[in-house]
Image (cartoon, rainbow, N blue to C red):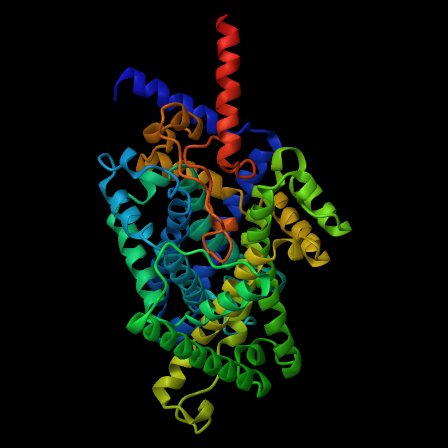
Length: 519
């Protein structure tokens, strides 16, 4: 690397640095200590044989599967940040320096493949989180672990704080932080390409295709057409598409029937962990936490959608104003804070839903649900049907609804309450260690900020390689909160996304100022 390149890289590093205050340093240290403790207590729990996978196989299998699941989750989460941020950037700028990134982009940005990837990826996230839950969540919260007091076990194992911190920091936030700024380097590997192909295969399977029916219904209800980069389906492709929609509806119906039947009959893990909770309450909690997940998924779409609007167009209702005043305080400084707190809340809800939907029926004793085979019952006991239900009804549906009706979310008082909770969780610093690990990961892997390779958005405009127009988000999973950060932007995690017009205006203003200074 030449001296000029080193100086350029150093200047970009400085632009991303955060001023370290005593309180921030305390949060970093406390979060890392909490993470280490969480890892120790979760691993110790696994070796007591008190998790579903460790009990069914052995502790080492559970530990290895959980570790691999967390590693894959980290790629799934980081890859999303890369693939939703790179579409506006001319791929020729990184084609020669990052050939595997270019392969990822060529596949993901062809036609409507980005929407397909995001739908498949959403199911993969839920599935992997459910696997982590089955490997590391306690079957019996009263079993002794390292001689810890009951209060500590209640908070870290029963409530699941240990698994939440472990999963959020190692499996999600660390790679999201790096991939938001280092999109090009992050997916320049075959692990990312394999993950992309897997997500596309999951979508192609049709398991999630009922979401497309919901998308069409919301399009009609909102009067907004679905934006597509492909020709309308006809002939065999039309039949094949809607055939998978019908199949998906059947799968979703079966998953709901299994889960609700087991909940009403007290045949889930809820009855084991909390025997005093009535079955009707378990059913309520199932739908309640699915609604919480749905609200949080929709909120991120709605927030990023209105971030592009002038302040006077962000709603006139009492709660819309309070929400926007809090969210966009200063230069939108609470927007990234919400995304972090939201991540903690969503993962907490995912783990609870996974516990609620995991069945407690011993195969071969004549109690198999709906009379399924023993093998099918053993599979259903893991609760993966909950991943299907949550992905479609508590995640994708709400994202699509928020894309079509963002103002409806802003006007909802629940939105304001959940925003306050998310900001409080971020303020506690529970996940602050992700920034420390992200910095260590960046140094270890030697990934560079995007602007080292393609410049900032302003520089690309000045050099005649301006980003493509930001498209209409309506009906797209890639819309709203999934637009991603402007590639190479120094404030990618520090404020709302700016439109192309705003970037061009900044370039003009900067050029005028430089001309005046030189004069």
